[in-house]
Image (cartoon, rainbow, N blue to C red; front, side):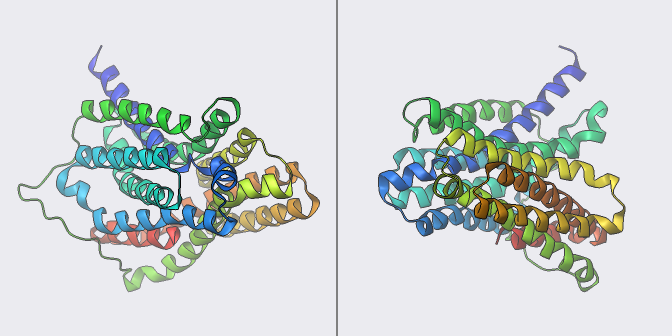
Amino acid sequence: MTESNRSAVLFFGAAVTFVVTMMGTTLPTPLYPIYQAELGFSQLIITVIFAAYAVGVIGALIVTGSWSDQLGRRPMLALGLMFSAASACAFLWGGGLAPLLLGRVLSGISAGIFTGTATVAVVELAPAAWAGSATLIATAANMGGLGLGPLFAGVLSQYLPAPLTLCFVADLVLIALAGVAVALVPETAERPARPRLRIQSLQVPAAVRGVFIPAAIAGFAGFSVLGLFTAIAPAFMGKILNYDNHALTGAVVFLLFVASTVGQIGQARLPDGLRLPLGCIGLIIGIALVATAIVASSLMTLIAGAIVAGIGQGVAFRAGMGAVTAASPPARRGEVASTFFVVLYI
């Protein structure tokens, strides 16, 4: 294998590792109706289980936000995979509220570590031929993994036995393979001789606030839409639209994240000043379609709402993130980006 081919393989191996980890964070989505039926959880408890994920994400962003610059990308990627594996084990343990809450928190920690570290690692590992597309590939790996989780778990739980265990066993196998990929990739960070681990401060410079506030509001709204679908879509599908096919539920959520990826890719073709407003308009129209779907008990309208809202979320998120990054002083971009993501995940 030539050096260029080896670099390309390692680059895509890192991207696939990103996909596997983010996929693990959304695996439980189509399984919530099964947990409700078997464990007697209310919809409120299911939503609390889902929301516990954000606690892990925010904690990881604040505590480990700058650690990959000090310890290196590979150790942090390995740590993220360990938390992802621990999350899968907690769900395999199952049987009650405590392990499910623990699984969601551990899953959030893995995502919080990977969101920043894997994005940077994929970009830094990109061969010259792929350098121009590296950021896009990292974004697609992130959102694509989030979308594949519900689809993967939905298909397995619908058509194969052991619906609450099989997908997590498969996830552990994929995590093990991802661990091999992490072991093979070279370290891309220049680690200091004496690493200084610190908690990421959350501040926004006064000069950036005029850009940060509208971008954060739009991003907050967009992530609320993603949370709405991934937490409550199974209840919508089963109790309101009378569809109890877990694979179908997973496919609807998958379309939402695919649409978000499309929106992030396509936003560059929109005029700068219109990207954020158009993204917000897409979110409004998408949620209006979802409300219409509930009233009319229409699956196709729900799917249309997911696609429109997903595109709007992708446009608003990428536009807001780009504007905030461009307006931030280079020395404080990590700090501002962490603050931005904390607002979104709340």
